[in-house]
Amino acid sequence: AAAALENGISPETVFECSGKTEVDGRIYKCDWENGHGEINMEKALEISCNPYFINLALEIGGEKILETAKNLGFGSPSDFGEGFSSSGGNLPAKGELYSETVLASFAFGQGKLLATPIQLAALSSAIANGGKAVTPKIVLGTYDKGGNFSETPEYSLNPVMSAKTAKILKEMMINVVENGSGANAKPKNGGAGGKTASAQTGQFDENGEEIIHAWFVGFYPSENPEFAVVVFAEGMESGGDFAAPVFKKICD
Image (cartoon, helix red, strand yellow):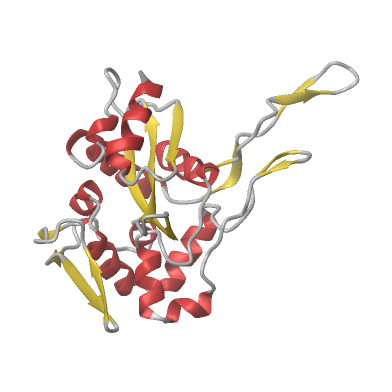
């Protein structure tokens, strides 16, 4: 969505969801098997419609999405201080995205993409703070020998998206909690914005059932946010059912 908005695609862009979409002979299904009909970007995010984002990705192309993902910190490790860092995760290579099926999977967060909770917290923060890149840290700052305190910078100098794009996405994420798949994440007070995810792993349990990880990523409160929160529940299948209520508890 950020890549589309940054490249001039209107949030009112409409695609039709029939419950599935075919890309180069492969069928990608929507959770709502009867389809959502004609929907815009806000509605697609609200109800987590994979076919919408596949069609959006095919329209803007893989290179622009990959560029946006890199700007947002995906594919790069986070360094918190000397001796402390997180995995960089994984992004598809530029050449791989010429395959429409690789691009389709990338469009809704699967396939070659691997992301860490830290990267998603940074993404949520950038959306909530008006588009600035966040520098995750575990050290507040340092003192020199003279006792002068120097705080670790919170933001990089370069915005990762325009303030306009961040504002649109922020409102969309608030709508997910107020009206969409993230309803179980709504705090008692203050409101919130966020996004559910149920991530296929390609791994299977002893009963042959695929292991699905549940995610909820968001910010709190909805106005003048102070916190970014990521809930990652291994093997719990539904982000809306399992991760979202944990987010609510943390905010409350």
